[in-house]
Amino acid sequence: MYMADYVLARKSRNIVSNLVHIFLNLLLGVGAVLVTVLSGSPVLGILLVLISKWRVFAVRARYLWLNIKSNLVDIIVGLSVVILTYYAGTNFLPVDFILMIFYSVWLLFIKPLSSEKATMAQSLIAVFMGMSATAILAANLNPIVAVLLAFLIGYAASRHILVQSDDKDFTLTTLVCGLVFAEIAWLCQTWSIVYTFGATGVRIPQVAIILTIFAFVYNYARQAMIKYQDDFRFRHIVGPVVFGAVLIGIIVIGFSNPIFNI
Image (cartoon, rainbow, N blue to C red; front, side, top):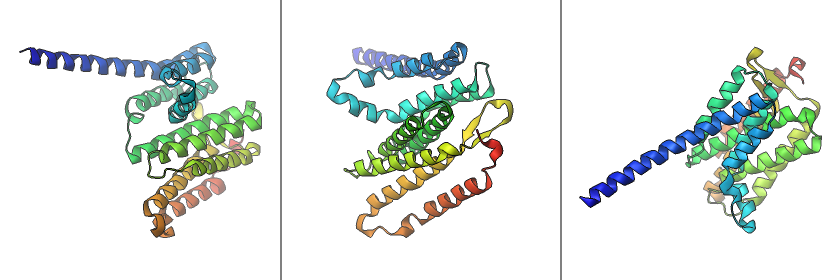
């Protein structure tokens, strides 16, 4: 009898704990956007995102950088949501509600996943969101800062994927990915194309799309090299490489009308 009561109590606590977890994530997802729009400043939204990551910083100094690196993708997504909200303006627009829903879905359903495909998806989302925010910020930033942010995004995305692979020495791979991101961000400083969608407030920088495609192909190729090792052949990655190259070519050649130039 006591055992049955104990099991029932444990189940009840688990249900309550799950409900609290869902509520807090929804509060963060909606609150980060809401306080940014209402305050007209990104400060409160950024603080809210960082406070939600308090466990990352509540460790000994020697573990701090490792903790930060492990959580960079989530931090990038959260801060990007706040920055994109801020630059959309102080009036509520459709983009604000899109960002609320997206961030809530990220926190509740996407972030907790740990499969190989989910990890790739998380990294690509971080690249798209992070580079979108960086490109929008670039107009008001020193170019060096924008390039450093691009490097950090590329490094974090690649590390997030490879840290779960069989490759135990992925430092060079992640640094190369970061450097490519930095180079492309530097080249795009003089020709920043942003696609806008009427009065919705949605703005998608071309560089964010290009680097998301590149990140997918680059990390897919690296994973294939790890998987096949000495038996690796180009045919193992020819599909994604050709598809990525063609897609980037179409975007650059066919969708770089100066009307989008900021």
